[in-house]
Image (cartoon, rainbow, N blue to C red; front, side, top):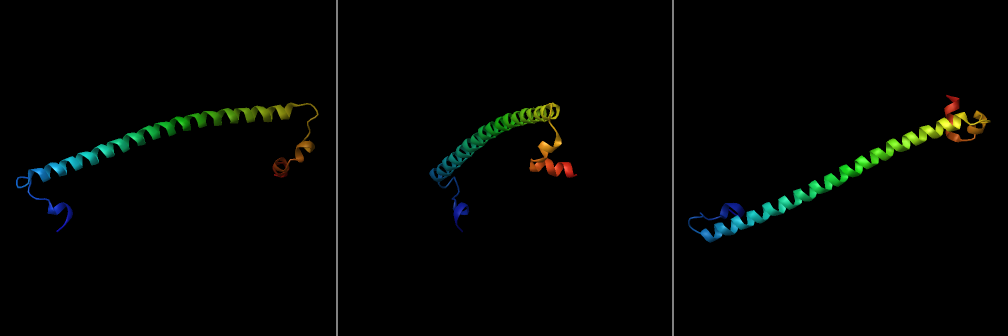
Length: 93
């Protein structure tokens, strides 16, 4: 057998058991460090997502105000908006 199963009985070789314990502690510390980095990154991403959602709402409102302004401008007729490909498609529907 090899690997983990070759570990001697700790009572037969206490120094070997202490080495394994130290190695396990290093692994645990590394994993805890990685988990903390992931938590920090998740917090950063959540904050960024919140900012983007706020910006998105603001842009939607701005767009709606722009559309409302375009509709109420004097002399604004649908033929001038028809030159815009997107509006021409919408008018056909």
